[in-house]
Amino acid sequence: MELSLAQDMTFVALIAQASWVVKAVMLLLLFASVVSWWLIFEKWFLLRREWRLTHHFEREFWGGGHAEIVRRSGEEDRRGSLEEVFRAGLREFRGKRQLTVAPQAMVESARRAMRAAYQREMDQIEAHLPFLATVGSVSPYVGLFGTVWGIMNAFIGLSNVAQATLAQVAPGIAEALIATAIGLFAAIPAVIAYNRFTHDIDRLANRHDVFMEEFSNLLQQEAARK
Image 1 (cartoon, rainbow, N blue to C red):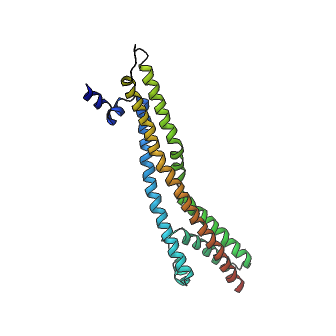
Image 2: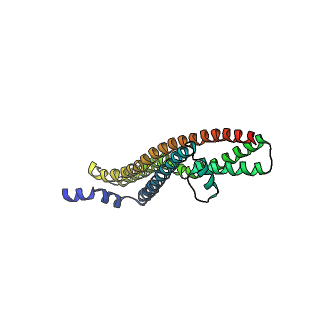
Image 3: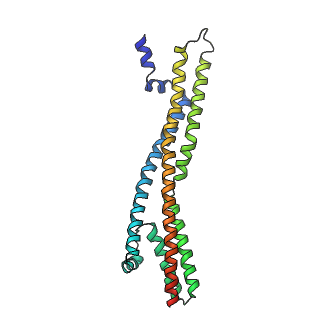
């Protein structure tokens, strides 16, 4: 009899015995967890690549490699978000200079082009972050809903029992608490990843802002000489 009870209290057995509502909650949370982990790894590799390309571009640009960077500015190959911002500003500046626009107007037009390119790049980098935030904030409550539903069913099942014992109510409560555990399992990595990625993206955005200001100053000097 003890062996049978132990088998009924295993993790898999408790999930199998859960009500369809609790099972649906568990499946939803597991799906959210799998998608979250996929996005976490994808975003981690993306940000790692962006930081590497940003360091490389800044080192090359401020190290005197302007000629090489300008030469490849007309190429279609993508070389990182910061270089895309630089290309947008340079193309706009060259286009306005050919039209003999006033120097200040050339610089302002290039600045607006860089800002538009910057927004496009940041939108791509920040893609899917709201999903991680949603999973991190909502999953515990979804798991709690499954737990409350399971416990409610467990006590309803005891309504026709003359004398309830802990052994009778324990399986229902245990299977219900699994939903909360799965909710936390989905939420904790999503919250940690969201906070980390948001911090890294803010730092990357600051690097872009600083470069745009410094490059605008260079364009201002270039425009004044023409």
